Amino acid sequence: MKDAKQLKLIANRNRKRIIEMVYRAGVGHVGGALSATDLLTAIYENEVDFKESRRTRVVLSKGHAVPAVYAELAEKGIIEEKLFPTFRQIDSRLQGHPYTCDIPEVDATTGLLGQGFSMAVGMAAVKKKEQDPHKVYAIAGDGEMQEGQMWEALMAAAHYKLDNLVLIIDYNKLSSSHPTNEIINLEPLAEKMRAFNYHVIEIDGHDMEQILAAIKEAKAVNGMPVMILADTVKGKGIRFMEHIPKWHSSGLTEEEYRAAMEELAQEEEELAHEI
Image 1 (cartoon, rainbow, N blue to C red):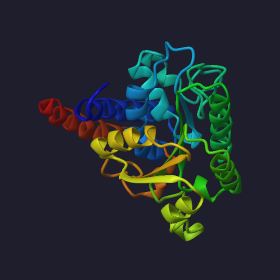
Image 2 (cartoon, rainbow, N blue to C red):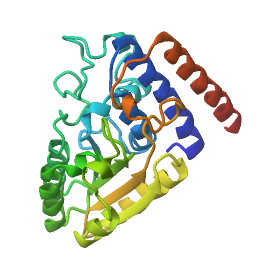
Image 3 (cartoon, one colour):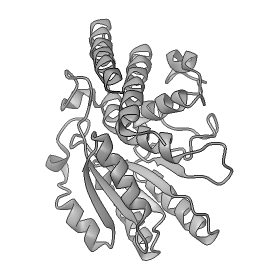
């Protein structure tokens, strides 16, 4: 198990990989990938063992944030970084949304919002039936929570008391063009989910200590599914991207690429001194 300091350093490396992929491709969903990086890093590093035949599953329901998954799979040696320049190219293994046929370690082909979480509910139901003790983690966006299919799946998971299911909301509060609360206001989301019979944990989604504590708490819950409501920042880690809707999906100029990499290199140096 890696501690918070180690995970912060890995998350920094993953952000570099995300920037590299999106820059080389000329386009990509960089903002939402960066907001989910800390959450995905903690889950993959500490909860997933790809050598196990029956293992913890991770479903990226907000499939457009897939650069964050590719970055972590590279960290774990599942894919090679030399593939990064092929991101989003025809016939590449690194498509713009997760695709299980090309990378079996990706647990669900996702992209159409709402469907990934629905698949995660099904996976959790099967694990319960087979008495498989492993969890299913699903990562969804707050914009995705505006989809009707999400609420059908949420009701089903609560009805079947899927306490092996952990839904993590990457609550970065921005869609591709506007704040999510200006489109359809989700609040009070935590109270709604408690009313749905969910165990709700509210955290700072970029505080690695809080992320680890939330995962530990989620693993101890019995009799109901868990929602981790993670307060995040779109574009986290790159100051000129943070809180800016443009970076939902955009390419980087060479100047922006260099500035982003320099900022992450400086952060890496600071983090390395802490370990």
